[in-house]
Length: 219
Image (cartoon, rainbow, N blue to C red; front, side, top):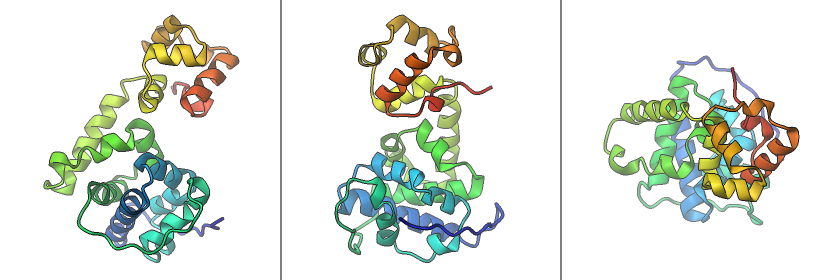
C-alpha cells in the first residue's frame, strides 16, 4: 500500500492549483470512463486512501509528479479492481473530467475538505452540475457548490446519509429494524439522535454503510 509523504503548502499558494485540478480530473475521468468504476466509488476511495488529504496539502509528489493512471492505481486496495490500470488517453472533456477539474480548483482555493463535500453531496449530483455549468467560469461552480452545501447543512446527518444511500424513511426503518416514527423524529430534530441507544445507531449505520459518528449531530 502507498506510503504517503507529507509536504505542507499554505492555503492561497497557487503554484499547484492547475496541477491539482488536472490530476483529479484524470482520476475521475479514467476511473469512470476507461475503467467503468462508479464515480462514487472512486470518490470514496480517493478519501479513504488518504490521497485526498495529500491533494488538500498540495503535496507535489502526488499532485504534480504522477499521472492519472498512477494515482488511480494507488486507490486499488479500496476498489474492486483485480488488475492495475494501464495508461489511458482521454477522448474529449467528459463530465467527470470537468468535475475533477472544478472540484480540484474549488478545494485548493477554499480549503474545504473533500470528505465533507462527498459526505454532503453524492458524486452523481456533483457530476450532474456539468449542465449548464461546464460553460461557465469555475467560480460559478464554487458559488453553486457553496449554496448546495449550505442547503444540505439544514438537514440532519441521518437525512444526508439516508439520501446518499437512496433510501426512503420507511425503507430505512424496515431494513434497520428501527421505528419509522423514530427516524422521522430524528430527522426533524424533535428527538436527539445523540441519545439513541447504541444498538439503534449500529443498525442504522450498518444499513447506511457509514460509521456511527457520521450519524451524530455536532454542536
